[in-house]
Length: 138
Image (cartoon, helix red, strand yellow):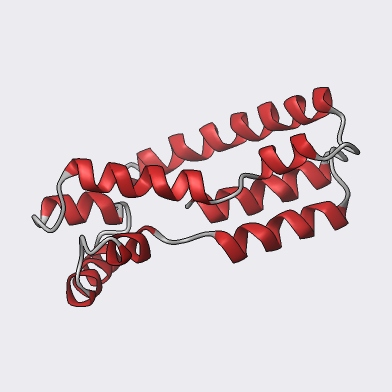
């Protein structure tokens, strides 16, 4: 989800003219290269076995609104704290588009903030639709 959100944010900032398409492609490539999925982190931290992860992925296919970390806790494979630590590591280890753009001297900070606010509004609308969908309303 983090990787996808970063890619979408970069595309939004390019469309708004906040960053160049070249910068957007560079940022997205860096995120794709450095992003680690939660399952991989939990495996690396020895919180899950490969068999448990495969089981959770199959469950996730049957429950599209369920998050991997939630399933790992529900099935007793991980504690909420272990999943929280893994998610914190995921956020901290993956570069964020906004951080990269902010450090880019060619990017206007005020325009970056405006672009981020527009993206957040769009994301909030999508989350509201997704919440309704997961509840069976759409």
